[in-house]
Image (cartoon, rainbow, N blue to C red; front, side, top):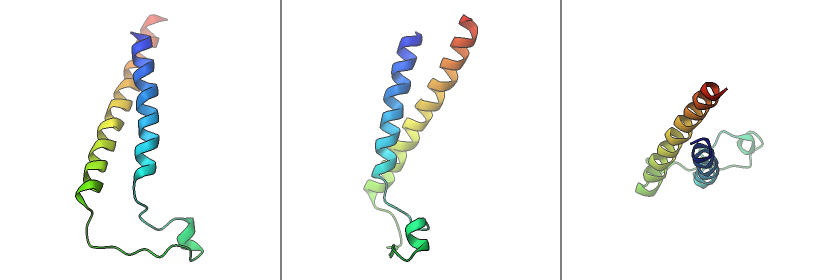
Length: 78
């Protein structure tokens, strides 16, 4: 069971990295402080961006649950 949860945690961690990097920048970062970013807001996000948000939140929930379950399982096994 520990191996299964560890592999779920590893896969969800890698997916979180990829999904977060796929998001479009919202501005307000370091590049905007130095005048490098010219942001144009189009008044709303596209369907693809909303779906990416939903998938990212779903993977974050899976990641959080696997961290909690793995911690509880390791605490009980010791």
